[in-house]
Image (cartoon, rainbow, N blue to C red; front, side, top):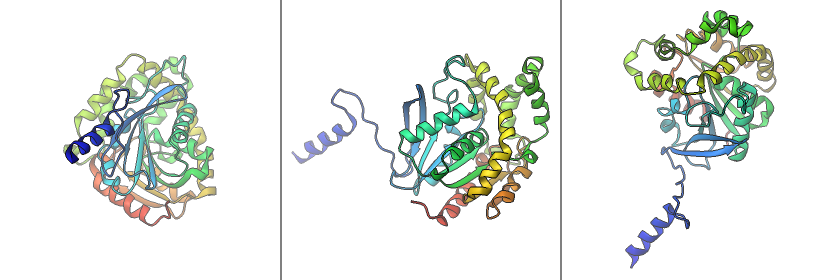
Length: 314
């Protein structure tokens, strides 16, 4: 009888009264996968770690998704609660037409902030990478009290951090219709691969599934309109750099910078520049490229764990 009772209890955990499966909670290093409606948009997110632990929110880059954090999450989830969402138009989140959802970094930030509100995350550590930088800075500026600490990995906020290609992209910002070749190059198969592989001395550490899957995503219907809108709106990020730097000077969040110093897009000077506004920032220039955690995953995880161990997180 006792065995039957145990089996019945286990079945109750995974089966709802209506016959639907209950999502099991994320525990320790086990990642679970969720989808909620936020601001009328279906948002997908990964979750791992004990919910009672301090939360790290991981914000991904272009043209990836929360999947980019798959190798890092298990190394942090034994001690921290992790949330990694896909922005609208990316990964497994909805990609509504630009006629119904404005693809601007302001709007991505509003949706991300609304997701955190919906999940009850009122304090957290932010991990910013690439596009996650402009989204995260907007989220943090709107509610500074939410920020417990900041981890920056090739998320630029300084003009000196912009590599040579941004001078070409600036032509697109001036007149997108006159420079379609700029966008075509930005989303090309070669560029999608090179975002991972340029600047690495360890190509064997890079999984080619990452860029083949990212490129396949970019070929989906509607993606050209979505990504061209965001590339054009990126000009507002560069214009916002002085405001973000001022925010850093005012609030001085505990900051760890783990920068892939060989990144040709966001060059090493952009990582070093954080110390200008947050003098106590811990800056590490790693021998890696734009997706530094693809080849320096263990090192970055170790840096994060040591850094956060010295913070007063609740």
